[in-house]
Image (cartoon, rainbow, N blue to C red; front, side, top):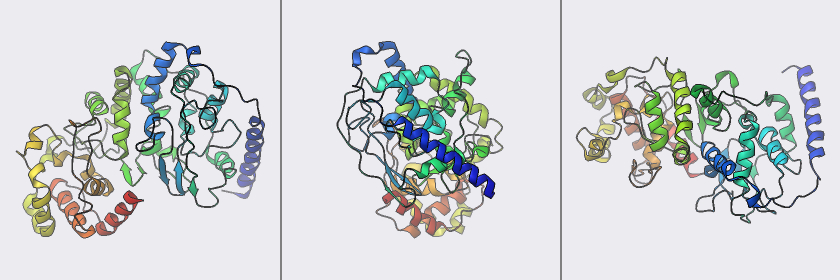
Length: 421
């Protein structure tokens, strides 16, 4: 950035600080009574909350829904999500609808403080008035829970909220809210993906200051130690995604031609499964169109088994696989007869980054929708970094025609550290 550009950014930051200060100190309104909201609007808000995974982010493990306290690991330290129940002291109880909309679209709290962009207001800014009104109605009719989130643990200068004004001046320039045609499924899907669904928050690369690289929208990104693969023509999926496959994946967390939901995506699926069928379908139509021209989709050619060559190149990996993995993943195994994705079609094995394969071995898979879903035990406590690296190298060589991953032992050590932190 030039010196003139930096000066303009800092001046804009000062304006943002003044505007935020002007928002503070207003009258503290009593929480609106739940019965004051229209039931149909509350129901619409429920559906939108599921599409936006509000509960997944704003609920601590073992905590009360929407009461906050979930730790979010970022390159700048750990943030704790806020309480969005209508508690008057620790939640949203004293937020007017206007204050709520300002927080969603401008990232400014009711007291005038800036919200960290881990709360994806750069996406929520495009939500239309009716949807934000419905989401407000839904949240304000939840059971109030008095719970204050733990203090954030961020490195300087990120621990100073005023610095976010500079970040906004540099990177946050939202356009007007979207107004898609409700009768056009593709337009509805694009709106949901880009606004309340905020898919790009995980599936888009970020720069060194945590801002999305908007020119690389949905090109793939990193989240909590996992790789969120591209949702466009760069997808590494061996079999093309169709609207039907995507819709099934959004509802069950599983598609036999691709993979099972893992890591943070498991939480997303738990919420998407409760969303309206029409909205899941609209998102599937839009994303399948984005991924349709993918050169990676090679159909059944991906099922070629290179077992002999892979075992010759990675004998220790082949031995470990035979002992720890083959009983579930070989053709004819009971799990495979239940419709689980065969490893040759598993998207993680075809990704340029090994971290998803590594994290699945370390952490296993939990069914996103209950005991009937896909499950895999964790091997992080029983295998060393070198052993996990050998297994990853072997399955990559056996079930993929992509180049071998490099520095796998170091990648496993880093993935283990990220998973434990």
